[in-house]
Length: 127
Length: 178
Image 1 (cartoon, each protein chain N blue to C red):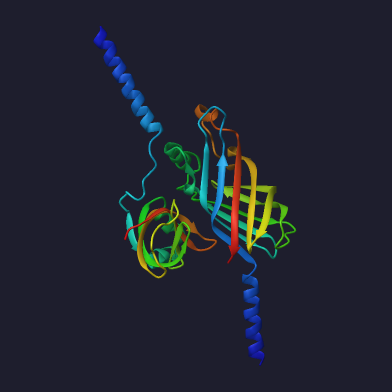
Image 2: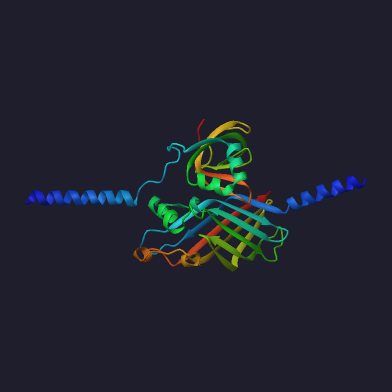
């Protein structure tokens, strides 16, 4: 009789634990995810210039790696070849230089048709 | 000579026109639909684009819907998949005008325009916006109220008590010369 209660309590605890894990699961860790696409910046840009809608559907919310030349460095963002805008979650602490060739991994969030930029967030530098 | 004046006037007008536009790529847009004593329903987005034409007060903004970050990952997922349907409608856009805009002045204005989100467009006629001009930059700040139902978003009855009907949207942009 007693062991029945113990089993019941264990089951309830397990359900509670799993429920909690589900409700309060962790955010995606983009830096740890395997990139779905790995491409050059001019190639990505070309896809958006050709057909922004098709390219947007293809990349939306996916983790991608883009290789290009650094054209602008700001507090928490790096722009590649004036067309790929990569936002970092924390202020940058790297010795990356202007015109350096880098590969940046991030989540594609959309194509900015006002300024014509490809936007990535939660970025990390690969090399 | 004629060619030279033409070229000069062309250069002058283009630089003149370019000088009138101010923009940002990391604007802040946030919203909150929390109900007291329940878990907060709040998200922020730091990658909004905004452009202001100081010549005529024309203003446009763009937000990537899946760029909204929630504290709770599951809430973020539900927001994207069930409510905002960000894969179908990846962007929210605003196009409007700040009436009687006077450049390089600190002033409170009224913003008028249309907001498109989740495939629906709603007109806003009087969004108060505070403009500050500092060191060649314009700081725009404001907030307004809206409803999920304005944008054809159904909130299931199960969670209705946990999500406020009136949603407060706030924005803040630091615009620099293009």
